[in-house]
Image 1 (cartoon, helix red, strand yellow):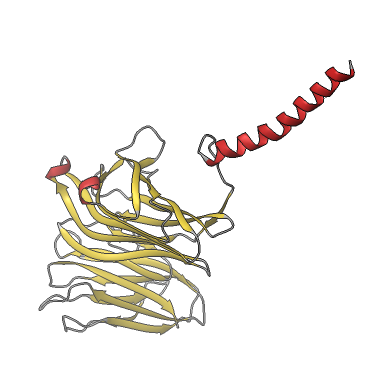
Image 2 (tube, one colour):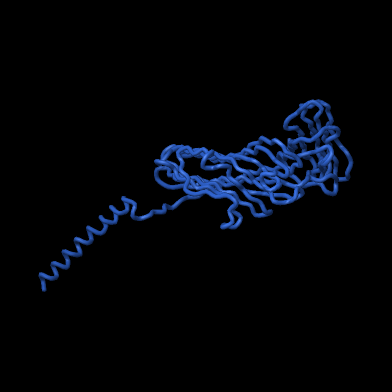
Length: 331
């Protein structure tokens, strides 16, 4: 009996050593998947918008979302190339051509993976990668999976999932795509581009989420009654001497505020200029800027003497069509 007990104790002791060692060996050799705990940081959303054009138009504007701390730098950039009305390559739907790029740099550690996703939840639209595998740029990244025109996940229009190669400290991704708007020109669309960058800083895993909100809106309106409500900041819009000769905006100002309103044309040319007007809540014109220099920036600086909704008018008096930027700030 005593000898049997000794054998049992010895057997248990051997197992107590062998089992943990075996588990460690198996784990090191990849037999067990390990999902590390990830601390997530979501950056503030950056917004970009444009009034929906009624022409084939070069836009060439860039918007980006950047997050940086002492251990890593990450950047999501969206470059808006052009807008095409009734693009025959996409079933005569309006399209917005763009490029997206993601950069990540880690001081000590490595980039685990990079994901990019497009979400759309208002109007029907589709997102198409432009020859992603052939023309996309992958620096220290390998594609795990990608898709466009996605229908399997609610509101997901396109995505690409990439893993870091050989635990890189730097990664870069760049690709072109087309956003197809499946509505009439008088409808608004919005989409969110989001990058997720997961990296290891030497002691822990962290994920940085960088969202950019893109919006293509219907016409700003051509009168007091149809003026579009806006806020401080920059607003890109389209104007056409025949189809859309003027745009109206509504904005709330408080007594005592001094506001600066600037109007600029993206690509000034001879004979192309716009006029800028400011009206008080009673509908009375209080200031205007109407130079006749093609590269001039129209500007109004005014101290508000009445709280309420003030109105801003942009007029195309003699020109053709163009993109313009309306910038409003408080002095």
